[in-house]
Image (cartoon, rainbow, N blue to C red; front, side, top):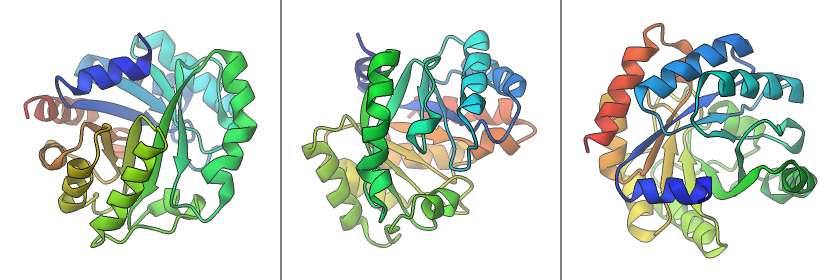
Length: 246
């Protein structure tokens, strides 16, 4: 069974948590330590990527450190073709659907596709959109941000992703966002689509994570909360427990 199929199967039984580690935010050795804690806390996968990466070497070394300290699947969350790594297990082959730059919609995918094929990475197709405030991801991705009071546009993107054959739909407010994706928007997306809905950005505690799951999120992603919280082990365990308890 592929990693994608396994994730989809798991979402039919419970809600999941993925950790997102940015190679630009910590040394590989620290990422490895975090990965072990993430695994112990009960997360289902570790994503690796960021909007401000400088080199593939950063990604390679971070992925290798994570693999040494965790048995969880490592899934790349790349901002471009040059940040792929053969050491990962899979890659979210994602299109930033609301970007005004075709590079993030399809051109980077064309550049990276041969690497994915010949490296043996499992490609996992995903539609990806960014909601206000967007933060660095929205700025770097040149996204036409979805307004927080416009759930119908989010639904349109989600349906387009599903009809294009994408296996997942990821909606986020941007890493470190002061406010996460509105519950009403998540509810509308979940009600109108049949593929798993991933939600991230601005989710820092178990209460917020639980709210998003109640609204319809199948998978919760936390990144900044892990990187900046000195007590992230406790926070992460609380988030995972809250999600699985819904």
